Image 1: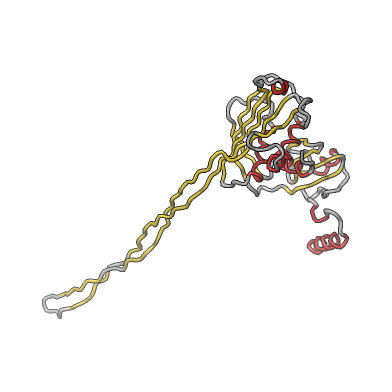
Image 2: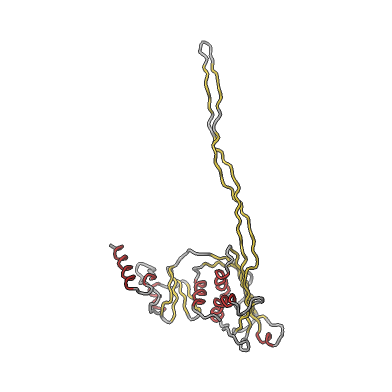
Length: 300
């Protein structure tokens, strides 16, 4: 009976063409569904799904992670909702940050030579970085005269290495037993001739198999310097620097860059005592927020 009701609801949603009807989330047995387009306040959302495990804001959007779902909420409207998933790619990263005493202010984002600021590659990278800088108080501007800092952005693949891994595959074989002729005699008995067989053995040998694994060292470097020093031709004083590195088999920077920006997010304008190791996944709330904010903004 329950299956029939569920099937009827799905059919009805399909026929009616309700937007996002099939994307509704059912976090618990007693919870009401949440779907893109729903008008709901943050407090009402918490009443439905319970207290959030984490919550962040980016680009005017609130991202909340609950036990079974993640929701993007803006102006009492659900923009997007995801089922909580433990699947997807996982990234190991290191983050190193330094700073001097400074105040957040407008920034002019520049590309590290030889990459041009007008290049599509750089503009694509800025999609992810722009909302994060704005959220932290470093509002990007295209007017260098208004900028308080110049933030240089460098990213790419620092090095690639090939590792050869050797494993050994077992091969089983059977060695039959040996046969021997024998003659038995005794006083007053006839002589008996026969054949004696020994038991066979299973033998195991190991065959080496080699496999090559390629690893790429991806990096994101951010460096903020005093814009007035740059305008006056002096050696610029640094305000803060952040370096993120990630090693892995993929050389697709467009895939990894949002993850590195998410890792830099909490370290921009701060100081780490040492190089920190972090682990992010595609389902990490900050990674989702960076990707969603990039999709919703105009390129600089």
